[in-house]
Image 1 (cartoon, rainbow, N blue to C red):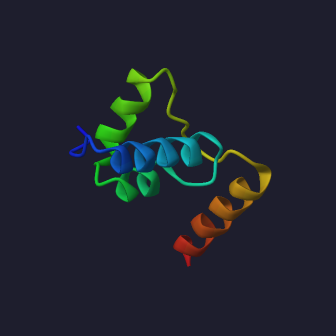
Image 2 (cartoon, helix red, strand yellow):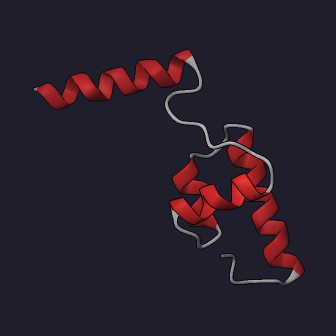
Length: 74
C-alpha cells in the first residue's frame, strides 16, 4: 500500500485522508497525492474505518455534474 513509513509520509497520508473525508479532494486526487491508485486509497479508507463516497456531495457538485453531462450530448 503506502510506500513510505516515514513520519512525513504518514503526515501526507493523514492529510490526504482528511481532505477526502472533509470533501476537499476527490478520491482520485487524494490517492494521487500520496502515490496510491484510487483502489488502494479506497482500501486504505476502509481499513481505517472510513467509507468511500460516490457521486456528488453537494447540490453545487450535482449541478456541475449535470452541466458536464449536458455538454457531452452536444
